[in-house]
Length: 533
Image (cartoon, rainbow, N blue to C red):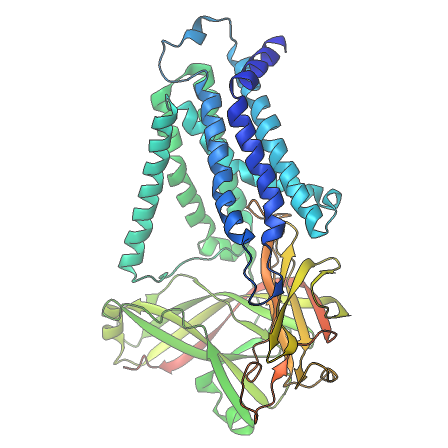
């Protein structure tokens, strides 16, 4: 223990400038971040946002500098270092370095996170599991930096190595973007946190092995090869965890006789229902609007959900298409990410279709376009049910939504009339469980009474959150998002014939949180499907 404290105190004296720089960056970030949160009038520029962006870059740079100087004080590369002749035991040397990192990097980071939570109106003691989990996640930054420092001889070589890694990463992304014309083709999705947890474990284990190997044996070549394998292992882990094996593990097949599972009805099979409905329409995301049409062809399928129980929401997490011609080889695609949400319609006589789009290679499109096809769509669905709901009046300025978020209303005073153009919120350490926020708007000036509940033409609503189980997300600040937005036509028009619809202070806001019921697989088959031109 005496030797550990001796090395620790020596590093404190030697690195006091770098340590002060790192501590100052953390303190500055904790101070400027709350001031950069958007609030007040819509046109008022917040100068602290630019400062916060600069400090956001300065903070990891200060960590990298401090870690590099710390590890290179007893450099692990070579065999002519003066410290080798001293009676240093490698476990004690490693323990001293770990103590320094814990005291001057991890502890300030924890204090910075707690200070930001406190400034936002949250009690840090209520979020201890989340704070500790965020410490684990931020190790994905610290451990690779320590590993790189242990296999390089000085700060310049370490900086060049980091720049080379970033350059290779950018080149890889640019190559994929050029190949796919800026679109993600057949990208996989993450239906559960298991894949992310495995990736975290792989990175930390590999970096820990490199660090221990260097301090125990100083096998530089082996350590460099091991550290270089980390990106490959991460890629393989992500690929394995995001294949159909992951879907099968997280989404159980639904029985065809299970009436509680929604049915997907394609547009082509819904002619009689559309004729009976007084209104119907479709909506889509247009994920592939800039696709290279010489290489890829976009296929669109419209469908709706039937059998959604009152109070339920069904989220389409992913879908997997397969095209089978009468003659020839079938085309089976990977799981595609989905973003569609199906809930109980306000009007039972109105139909709402969601458009799914995916791409296939142009060569396969030309081969299949003249054939009658059988399209099989498999769905990975999550059923959610209302867990609790509460209501509060919308206020001006900053306010708290208990058990949810710290928010700021953005004031707008068009033509001398005050209304709220949106609400931006901060969430403690992670996004909340799936939550829907609905506010009733006012037709005309905000001095008039808010709209009465139940008027389907005036509410504005947004859904946020997910069903992730992790107590915190990766990052160094709070999660932020827009909770409400006054986007209905006429809210900013100057035409006197059009009565604007505004979001006014005092209007009722209803918050509904959902709980995950189950995750299932289901599907639908469309016969005589044609690709079109």
